[in-house]
Amino acid sequence: MTPRTRFLRALKREPTDTVAVGNPTSIITTDLMEQTGSYFPEAHTDADTMAQLAAAGYEILGYDTIAPYFSVQQEAAAFGCRVNWEDKEHMPTVRGHLFETPDDISIPEDYLTRPPTRAVLDALRILKRRYDDEVALIGKAMGPWTLAYHLFGLEPFLIRIIDAPDEVHAILERLMKATVMFAQAQIEAGADCITLPDHLTGDLCSAATYRDFLLPIHQQIRAQLDIPIILHICGATLDRLDYIAQTGFDAFHFDSKNDPYKTVEIAGDRIALVGHINNPETLYKGKMEQIDREVADAIQAGVAVIAPECAVPLNMDSKGLKRIVDAARAYAKGVKDDGA
Image (tube, rainbow, N blue to C red; front, side, top):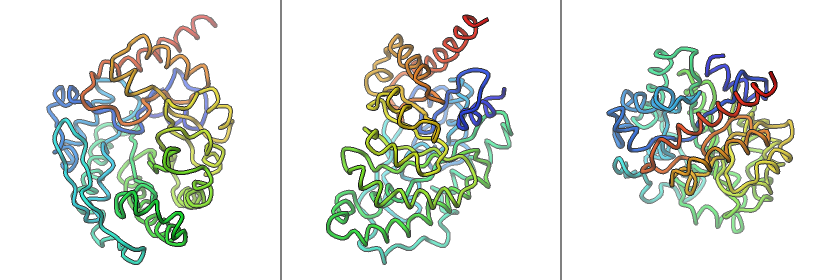
């Protein structure tokens, strides 16, 4: 199988020739920047630099995927938020917020041609021309909940859940249009699937909040996008996984805070799972044998695609990321040999 075929079949929970390894979120490190000669912050807004750096995931690490959107701030910047693009050792950050009320929300007419969004679209076109159907291209579009954090501010938005729930619904409905617009443009540019980060995390909001506010929005997004969608939410999510499995999304990218066996049990045959190799302890500290154990554990549990749990620390050694691929392939070969 080609890496693209392997990855897309895994998202459908179909048999593959070996274990699929992907990165719905960023696997960029400073040493990968050194190896490619492509660096942050230019890689956030220059399509050629973005494409060259993203391709390292496939060319250097051996992943079945290439994901050219590294941060979570491209849309916020395109809306008009002030973004500090930082440097090669730091991810971009939003400075201040843009809106105060739902009526303030207005998607700029040139939203898709502003440098932060255009760079992602142009990078996907470059990568599609270069690789065609060889490797899976993963686009990324922030979900409306995450966009609300960036555009309204984290605390002001969360306070509305109690004080002004109708405003929350209105904000999500309006921002959903930007999510779908950017995702659809990425599909047209060559993306094979879309990661949808929507950070309604367990440490900030209850499962009931997901059910009442975001589940209906996610179901609407699913109905509008004819492409595999991978939902990403950090942190503990077992308490809302049953609702997540009702979205119709193809896969859920989950955190190592969730037991893989319990996660697979709840998900059942409703949604594929992607993850869940630990970032701060296992990968960052370069615990190679622990990587092997976590990879084996995820495969045995029934996780469809092995991946780091979230965007990896920029200053970690990329050898740990390569080890994920090696461990997954070695495990699959061992299983095949034992069954031969």
